Length: 374
Ligand code: ATP
Ligand code: MG
Image 1 (cartoon, rainbow, N blue to C red):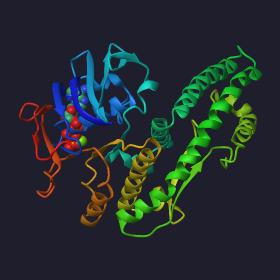
Image 2 (image 1 turned 45 degrees about the vertical axis):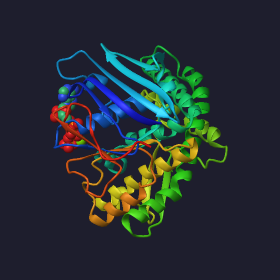
Image 3 (image 1 turned 30 degrees about the horizontal axis):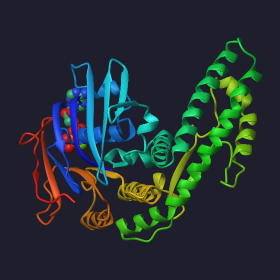
């Protein structure tokens, strides 16, 4: 789907503003701290049900206000879809074409991939960043994954509650096992889907890395399961079961569950070395860009359409050669919304530039258009 417009009400530094997008390339132009990333955040919210950089919805509400609302209009081969997300007094509501909907109805409907400076956390940050990358990417392509994830998260919360109760002597340790069946079946489905996804995108990441960096480097995406070694060969459930058994005493002692996809991780290896430890700043940035671009291609392959690609300041830290290479790499994509503090070079012809100043669209909402709608 393509986004046609978005209306932001009390969202971050926007009071009430509507932005209209072009079918292909859109540049959100503005000095620092004007609201460019906030717009990408709003589009991500419509695609995935949540911000890409803030997990507390209350922080997305404009200072001093009590609610936010983001309304988007989308189009896919002539069919219009409206999505709006409102957050009001701790309650979040999603409506698709005016109908109250669940987050699981939303995720995957539009298809979005975001790349931002925060992505460096995919290399440098905690495992939670990488799990979130996998979960959002795969959920948008695979509804069954999302369902397994929801089942897993619920069962995990119940098991952890019981483990706490065991600690305080209210429940016997053996009783926590009632949740293991769900944790194993949903958990194995999650782990297997992650392994498959990493295997699928591996060659693409390697080729993207080569294109952007101009160097041939062997890239591996290594899934790091804590306490077991899944091979994606149908034995994951047994391996998980055994690992859970093996950790039962320790889990009781700690009071929470220690084995499963909620603690797993993956690593990006360049030339067999973890890029987190041995990569230069530039290599790490190249690595995460290669990963994001592979996510875009995977989505196109799985769903038959490109996602909306949100690029936040991605060119800011790249040298000229890498900028050129990345520009070529993304030239096939369908709709892109990118941010920059500098205008695009004059030769960009199918570009719509939207200037953002202090939470407002300069020129009152009707952006300058230099290209045609296709
Ligand atoms: P940069 O080029 O530095 O990345 P940007 O244009 O992407 O800048 P944003 O991250 O979109 O800037 O943020 C713009 C402004 O929004 C910031 O000054 C920030 O203080 C403000 N802001 C963030 N959250 C809220 C909120 N909940 N209410 C009001 N303003 C907010
Ligand atoms: Mg920004």
